[in-house]
Length: 602
Image: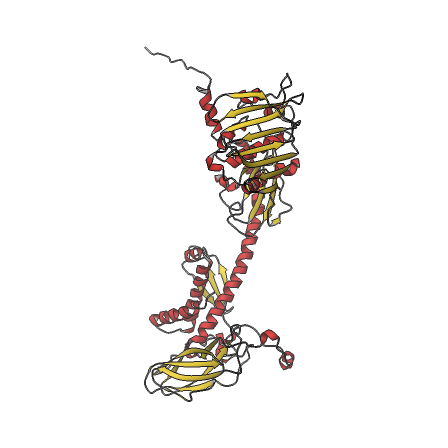
């Protein structure tokens, strides 16, 4: 025998009304949001002036909001209908007003006043009746009752007043500046569209502040796609700014901010919303808000329609992000290239020219002009750029007058040139001392120089003078030379390391790099391939694989990226200028070149 179970049905209902009211009253987790709702009540009541007063009276902190709006709608007896407000929680008068055609009304839940529980202990609300007599309603946190009574007032009152006192201990430090900044962002478009004037009088801070709608920085984007949905149009006001993690597009509903950043929603976690290039607002008046906090969105079909409607805007912003990223990458590449070139120029000046003079920089003048003689001076080329062409003949022959800032100042440093060299046994090496001021200008007169051998073998031709000759010993070894520059009481010192060797290892490179200068670099995306960089000798260009995992890791920090590119340069330069050497010797040269180059990176 089978039994059939008959389904039962029913309707949901509140089991404990007071418990439900308590949960609703405490659902607002942001006291600033609660204050914004009180101000919105004033805007909904067509107020043109709203004053927020923060102060202390009889030892108690209070917050007062005064407006000149329509006040509380009156009941049939002509008194403010406070009883309806207190007994129709979740059944807002404003919702009925909107259904009857009321415009520019934001409230709809009938629970805004209850958020005073997150601000203070007692709420007193004043409004005038039809005859001008003033009444007040008092509610207290944690109590289910309310009281309505007439209130004596010397002057007639227009609009409504709301007083919360005493304030909760945790928000007594809520300053007027914080309220101003929050309202300027939260009610930005409501203030703009309604024209309401909001003033904050902070007695505790002794300041008076006006709330102006927030202004976004950056460039306003024009000609954005029109965003339309079957539920209505969506307003977008987007600004292009310098890239920053603080930049965000806020989500609004009918002029009131709902989310400070649209990326709070998982569906907007991605480009272009997370790019950091954009500020502004997207205002969708048809969205459903979470009633408790009013700072969340219901994930329903209306949100889905908004996401679909934003696809054209998303595509446009992605194009802008791509263009901005390319421009930033190009600027960064120019800066990195300049830094890497400078570092290698400095390194090649210090390293032995017998092995590292690949670009002939030791024999070039300040504008790339070849200097006579094998032992040329380094003083004029230490600041030279490798690819700067010579001046035209007419310009070279024309005498050039120095400006004031081109004259050298006081002695600041001295440098032995070369700072490091390899010399075969029993051979000689020409040396020069270069004195500079604090701005690295060369000092040509008024400086005396003295030379000495601090450690090692060999001998110097003389002890004084700008130029000197070192004679290597008959046995290999390391010699440390010291040069001292003096200008009055200012004394500077530098060293030169001379390595005496049996013979020099010449580079087997068949590439004439001396005429090409230091190579540039470009980026190429080759994800999944193992090569990090390769040298295009025809274009004198180092190609870096930006799809390599090492590059992806390096670009997260600019300093790390510069070091990575510097090491790739060292790898390519060493491998192409020491061809034929064993691998261990190649690695030794790479370590040496990287060490000296990275020491000059900025």
